[in-house]
Image (cartoon, rainbow, N blue to C red; front, side):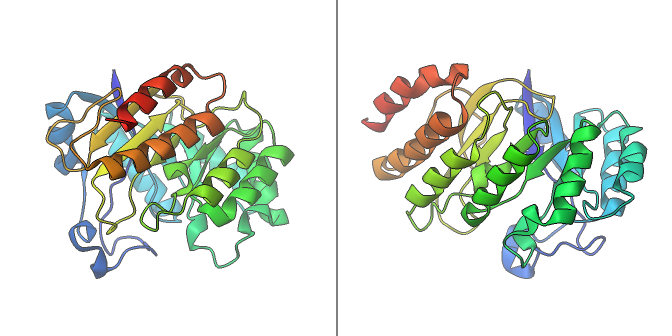
Length: 279
């Protein structure tokens, strides 16, 4: 079964989306289940995990209502205020819906780089762990040292690194990202979901997505596909990008496997990655 472990729906103007602006071009419009459902059916995707895009309980309730209406949505990663003393009560309400799977906060939009390790946030993350709710880390390279602090202080919390902490592919500088990602992995027995795609507007066309099923949904797999391709590819395949771009993507894949997936079966693909990189 193919599971898309991370997708969004939004309605412009309905909720506060701090990242959204007309400069996003094609993304600056409503995206709703009727837009996605025929596409996933065409490509054999059975289920998806719907992820929040606004720091809003109202948006989370809306996403859960979509999940109730559309069976292909297997789970929702929503939002809850980690700094609210009443967080436990909010989680009880959200967990009443079996499709609620985790919490995410737009950390990348926070002006304080150390937001993740502020005392009230750590207390909230501890509450998530007590409730058995996973936490998605929407972070950049500069935040990874704080992600490691969270992992060390709350080892029972299941952490999800979204978009593989957004490596700076467009600038071609990934050594610092790779080093900090490796340092952030914490306990190797931990479950991680890691995804990477080129930042909007960087002109690159390939995308690497790696999933270990930290959301409780999905399978262990590595997928490489061409953005905008008519047919998504699973396994180790590359679309016809020039060899330098392929090698850059594969270097990122190797770093991800080595830093996050120690002991994970996907390590066996390292030789395959090396072979592809030389073609």
